[in-house]
Structure formats: structure tokens, C-alpha cells
Length: 224
Image 1: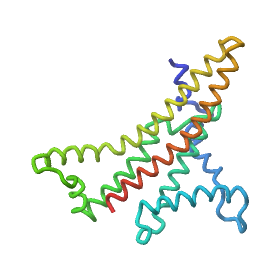
Image 2: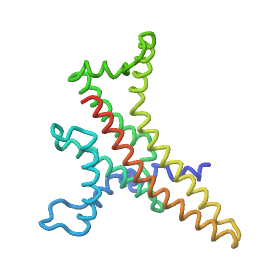
Image 3: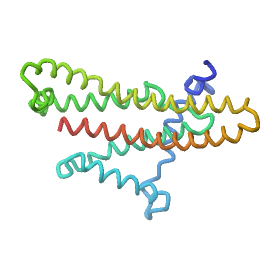
Image 4: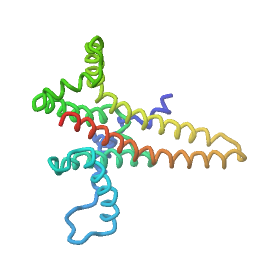
């Protein structure tokens, strides 16, 4: 079990430098520069999904009064997606599999939304605690349920991202260790299964970044 979870160990260091955690910063060097006079192919390929996300996120927010509000969510999607994809490479650390990373992304966002909502739109925040059509006898219980569900939102965001990264990497590690001990007849089947799982994990890496950004936008739209 120690060897199985060693891929999530952030303790690897060199010359008193924590190299594993530095990978989450080094990934920023892969982002295209926005200061070129002419768009290169890499920059144009990067802008295609970014523009699509910007149009989709603007539908969830008020486009007229919140111009530029989608930039923080697009940046968060890019950061999470690139770190998730980076963790699929051999011998590289997946920082998004740790709660210290995911919770540090989710908690400040949720806290800022709550502070803004309760200071600027206090009446609207109270209205959200009681859904429309709730019977009078159930209103106290609905307030408690909505309050609890609101409080655990950053935890659910963080756990969802970390759990999906851990589960996929564990399956790939288990199959990788098993492949070394199987016979030649089953080896080809195991390799095909591993390739399919790797493609699935690549899709999960992108989808989890998208889900994190979309849920953050939905939480922001409730308080605005």
C-alpha cells in the first residue's frame, strides 16, 4: 500500500527544494505568451477553447454588467486542467490530488462570494434559504438544510476534484503493476485496457477543470 500511494507523496526534494510542489508553478511556463505581435499557431489553438468557454460562461453570468468576470474562472479552468494533464506523465506529481491544493482554490472563492452576497445582497441571500412553494411548517428545516448545503460547498468542490484524480491514478498504477506479472497472452489485452483508461483519464482531467469552473460560476451567480 505504501508503494501504491507513493505517486501522491509530495515529500520528494532535491537540494532542500520541494520539486514536486514546484511542478504546479512550472506548468505556468507552458501557457502561451500574450505579447506577440502576430498570433502563432499555438496561441490560436489555445484561444479556440478559451473563446468558447468565455461565451458559455457569459450565458451563466450577466454579460452586460459583469464584463471580464469570466476571466478568473477561465484562468482557474486552465490551471486545474494543465495540472491534471501534467499528472498523467510518468514520474510527475499531481498536485490537484491533494486537498491542500483543491481546498485552497475552492475556499477563498466561496468565502469571497459569501462576503459579497451577505454585504451587498442580504435580502437575496435570505430568499435563497427558503425555496419557492415551501410550506410554512417546513421553512425552519429548509433554512437549516440550505445553510448546511451552502457551508459544505467548498468541501464538495475540493473533494470532488481530489477524489477523481486519486481514483484514476490508482487504477492506472494497479494495472501498471499487474501488467509486469501477466503472461504474454494477456499482455496485449492489458495494454489495450491501459490505453483506454489513459484516454479516459485525459478526458476526466479536462472535465474536472470544467466542472470546477462551472460550479464556481453558478455559486457566484446566486449571490449577484
